[in-house]
Amino acid sequence: MGRILKIGAAQSGPIQKDEDRDSAVARLLEMMKEAHAEGCDMVVFTELALTTFFPRYYAEDRADMDSWFETDMPGPATRPLFDFSKDNGIGFTLGYGELTPDGHHFNTQVLVDKNGEIQGKYRKIHLPGHAELEPERSFQHLEKRYFEPGDLGFPVWRTMGGVIGMCICNDRRWPETFRVMGLQGVELVALGYNTPSSNSLKASETKETRQHHSRLCMQAGAYQNATWVVGVAKAGDEDGHHLFGDTMIINPDGKIVAEAKTEDDELIVFDCDLDACRFLKESTFDFAAHRRIEHYGLITEQTGAIPPEG
Ligand code: CDT
Image 1 (cartoon, helix red, strand yellow):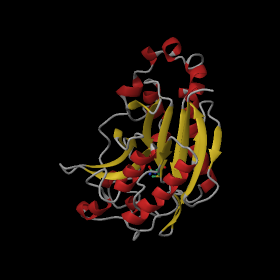
Image 2 (cartoon, helix red, strand yellow; image 1 turned 45 degrees about the horizontal axis):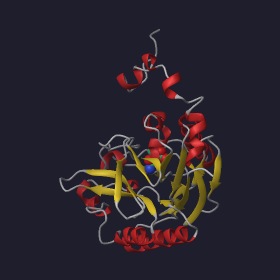
Image 3 (cartoon, helix red, strand yellow; image 1 turned 180 degrees about the horizontal axis):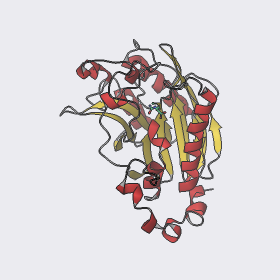
């Protein structure tokens, strides 16, 4: 028997524009209760789990969007999740829009321990989309308008018997995300996503292709860093915009061991053995033995690709 962290990956079905926080939190709480009944140590909720995926809507005045953000965590609406955590000894991660006291906006996820205490905070670093209205797109994705890039790096936390890290949605597409956490010995990455089923600039791209991209990134991130990855979606149709779902738990071999079957609120549960990370961390991906950082300089010196001339 290894170090088992029983994880509940709690997919959210669609949240419509007029659904309030109390209703969204009641749905999350239902899944948390189910996870507790199944003996979970920790529940992973999705990105921006309290509201519809509001970056699809354009507002000329950004301040008009502040109602989608939380100024306190926990606040009055989210307090029941923290109370349940503390009263029942179950941890969780939760994604939400964060508005700081000094007026900064972040796409944020907190890691809450089994005492209902916030152990860690992550602010999304790779913000997809665009900052201005782009009418040529079939729908908008204005994360670059409403959020600032995260300013906390990719920390990991020793909590609940393991080493846990977080990232959010588009972060999963970047190998750097997982590697920075891998270099801190991460054993489980909790990540939430809202991914549209279609590409706003390329109508021919299928939902299946986009699901393939999502899985490919998470499975590679898991294997190449010998870590569990828990990817939790918001799924289904929000105001005519479909999100592809595909919540899943991936083991350190990069294999999908549990996945959601619906586009609704759905909990999937798996006993994640954190000791299963050890073999690859001590062999193929023994970083200290095999990495050649003298050749990796471009990764931090340059953002865009510069092909050779000619
Ligand atoms: N929420 C989020 O980051 N979604 C993006 C959509 C990419 S298309 C602009 C994702 O990477 O899944």
